[in-house]
Length: 346
Image 1 (tube, rainbow, N blue to C red):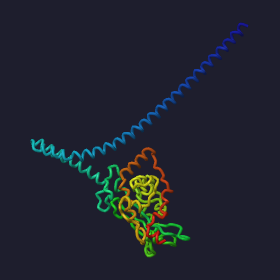
Image 2: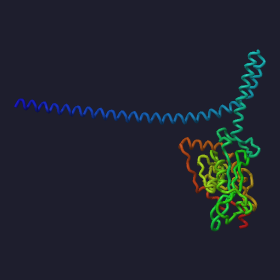
Image 3: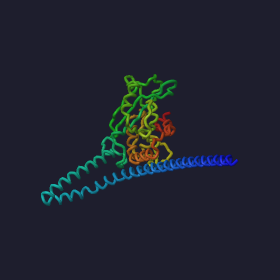
Image 4: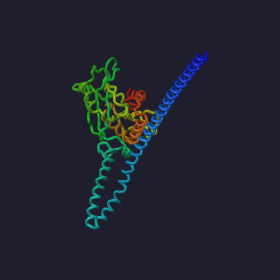
């Protein structure tokens, strides 16, 4: 009996010991998992904090660049006078002063060139109609082009729109491309009163496939400016990155500058008349794609600096460009888009 009782006690002790070991192991596993979660949360907080610091540093860096340019322009005459006084001292100090002045002038010249290039308003071909100057964070002029297309009708009743002319201007208003394009289908409505296209324009026109390749090669990597420009992209059967598109019909900046409601989509003719004091799309000969592209380009320059900063902020915040609304560009078929004398004739 005593032996049996002793065996029972030993078995019970083993069971308690094994339960204790199991519980200890389980507690260690739970503790390790909790520590891993805590480390992961800490790492995520550090990553978020680093991203916020980088964004803040980038913003301060752009502000510091603007301040440097302004200070350099303001202090140029003072530095020039100081170098003149130093040049009257010893030969060694004279040599040092002349060298310092040369380096300073090279910096001032470089900054001045950059300011003039960024603003683009030194161009004689396309001066700013409003007299405003662009801030230095605007797009590089070599990457900005203006696009406008004219369409004709094909198919039953001319309901299908196909490309018949395409014009592309560079930032300074120089014509990079201006060709008549032969549609893929027979033309059933030339829409001459609006497009300006007549039958003889398309007799020796460039085939659509060839013209499309030429146009795409010019637009690749460029910021494209235009009015209701997604209609032009549709006629070209192309998709352009939306963060590299500047549609003057949808931006609230031009509407606000013209005194229109923010959700208003004014026509190109209305904006050009209001902001550029320029009359376009008049007469009965139809629209001119070069003239329309020039008007859109000059409108873009009026708000270029603020527009580009707005795009940069949106890209920085969202890390991806937002798709613009296609419905906002459909107003081009409304009566206000066409000249008054044409509407009167109808």
